[in-house]
Image 1 (cartoon, rainbow, N blue to C red):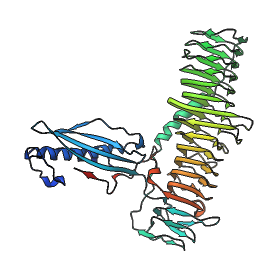
Image 2 (cartoon, rainbow, N blue to C red):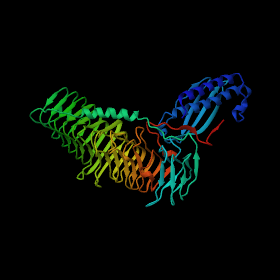
Image 3 (cartoon, helix red, strand yellow):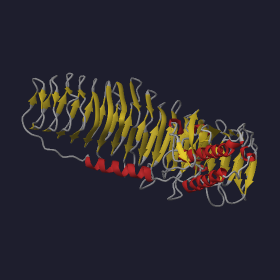
Image 4 (cartoon, rainbow, N blue to C red):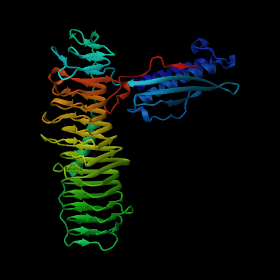
Length: 566
């Protein structure tokens, strides 16, 4: 990686050369080509060439600090020394981008002299399709052929001894193995011994994830709510404006009428909003406290902004209910439950206490579609206990779009998890984090995601599992779990991206990759459970490997053969 001090030193050197060029001490030989300028423009042409170089180096340093190059935009023109450089971009992907850097210097005749450099810049977290890094003598890995075969397409790093039996192979690459170990077996491969120092598995800086979980855990603690209701029911008979009011009741029933107002407070037992009732878009800054449940039914809507709802029991969204809000907070001591055609659109928090669960169309009796669309910010689904996304029936669907964050605390749970299932589950752009366990199965589809399992207080129930055909996950799978195995990919599941299993606190935690599953991108693990790998297929693809928070690329480089300049 180009680090800032190196880049600054390089640019400083370029500035010195620019100054020297003013005195004519840099000749045409430095240009690498002949440029048709008069003698009066030679110094400016040379300066433009070095400004173009400076622009390329400067921009490579900017790229080193970004995890996704596909959303890069052309930066502003930069001034440096006697001129400027301009960087333009094209063919942007997550890990590769075409860069044209143009240097410009005005000559004494008032004309600009220009020079450009064009290059393809790419970065990589690893150059290996498979990287296993078990330390200590006797480490061994065997490619398994029972029920199929194991295939690695690309380079592989083997810290110990690898056995590749018949029908298995390593193609389009080399097995690099540590000095003193060996590669054996009747399969197809090319092997090369490596002397110390040996490659090391990239270490994960967990501070990004730790900070998120610390904040989320404090919110989950705040969802442990005990509320005392008022007395007497309120049944609305018309639209109401509750601005500035403090309302106490037993049950509140909207009966098809709307609520508006700012800075009001409601304390009740059950708040029932139904029959196409609405808390409208002019409502804001209010708090609703329920000693039991908040129920949304029958085309009801909350279109308000900047509010908080507290429930000592459950928050239920059924029928065709809608939350379309900005900066909302819903805190629930028990469960958040959905059924029917339900929409959450906007940004805010849905938080359940350690006693509660988030259940998105999870019951076998549920039907319809739950949709969450994060807009103008993030939607956070935070559960102190289980989170279940979709049922095991084909009549339900769950769709999450944009920056949705899913979290399950389960600090001491022995069975709890985030479970994402069903072929009708489509999740795009989400970050999914669990202290204990994540399971994705039954054909669920996750794209552009980050799945992260933390290092739990004990090794029980501490793993990340992707299973079943046609389950597909695209993005980053990170397991710091302590189970053997703490990463499980099996039953023909399909992964595209980075698959990483390692924790730096103990030697517990291994990977289980088998069941004819496929990985396109890179697989990096400490060791495989049972010292066996497959049957499975892993294909290296640098353009499919994201760089999630917590990792640094090994290098940001210019692709060989792509450099061109004048």
